[in-house]
Structures are given as structure tokens and as C-alpha cells.
Image 1 (cartoon, rainbow, N blue to C red):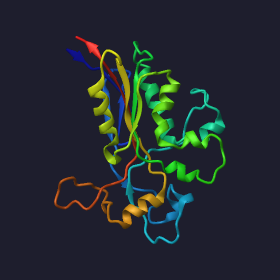
Image 2 (image 1 turned 180 degrees about the vertical axis):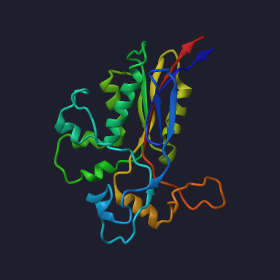
Image 3 (image 1 turned 45 degrees about the vertical axis):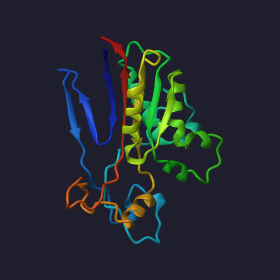
Image 4 (image 1 turned 60 degrees about the vertical axis):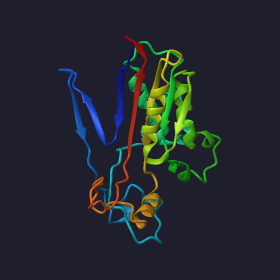
Length: 239
């Protein structure tokens, strides 16, 4: 038989916080809400991405606070390079670091799988000239960056199946875990960095007007674009 141990690192739609006093875990759900000043383009988080030719705004969403924060020195990354690393890559690095800190028998045979489908940061940096942009903004580099940082030589894969990217990624690795790859870091990440992308979905009537997805309900009128990141550790063990 085999047993699996899972350690979680999570940001976004639900935060899990461990209480050091009684070792209990508190789950704090974060529901979709009105984006700051969503009726005024210039007041949104996307103020540098304003398209004045579009007379619409996106009112609801789930966003991660300060997704640009990153400790360069801790991960031995130069400041100039860090500026051109997609925040999604930075976040999964930090999440994996949180996970491996509680694992005692990690070895370099581990694999890495990241579900990631958005590359909006590349568009924001499209007119920049930097030798770091090539590897910093490509979605497929996210898993390799983790493997390199933590010296992992197992299979390293990024999966893009749109909304199901993280789910498919975890399923793929779960089925191939064996004695040759005794552990892996798995998860997914999504950031909504471009207002224009959300506006296009809004104009296509894909987004919910009231901020509720209402999945499989007759009253469903769209979904809510959300930001979240999750990485977990999956270990193979004999029992």
C-alpha cells in the first residue's frame, strides 16, 4: 500500500492560518467583492492599463493583495532580474518554500508540476528591453524555476488547460508517483494583471454581473475572474 502526506501553501480564495498556541488551523474564505473604484477606470489596480476606447468596467473579482512583493535576497535573485520575473513565478516559489520547510526527507529526485495558463505579465513588459524578459515572462518556465531553486531533478512540467490547469496537473502527477519519484511539488497559480483581458470577457458576457458564479444553477450568468495560488507536497510512502 501507499500513503500520501500533503503540506499546503495557499494564497487567494482561502487562507489557512495555523494558531501557534493550540496548533489548530483556521480557514478564512475570501468571497468575490467589488474591485476598488471599479466604476472609475483610473482608480482600479489596472490604472496603467486603461483603454479609453472601451466604455465598460469590471466590477467584481478576487484579487491577491500586493502580489508584487518578493524577497530577492532570500531566493538569491538579483533585483533587476526579479523585476522581469512574472509575479506568478515568484508566488509559487514562495509557496513551495513554505511547503518544503516542514518536509524532512526531501531529495533531488522530486518532480514539480504547476498549473498556469495566464501570461499577462509578458504583455505588461512587452516593450521593455531586458535579457531577463525571455525567461521571466514565459509561463512554461514556472516549474523549471522551482526545480532549479530547490535543486530538484525529477520531471518538471507546466500544464495549461485553462481553468482546469491545476486540477489536471495534480491528477497527472498523482498517477505517476512511484519509487523513482518519491515526492513532488504540485499546484497552480493565476493572476489577473491586465484590465483589458477582463474587459474582453465582460463584453463577451462571460462574467457574472453580481459577482456570484452560481454553478449549475438556472440563474447562472457568468463566472468571476479570481486570483489564487496553491502549492502542495505529495509524498510516496510504503505503509
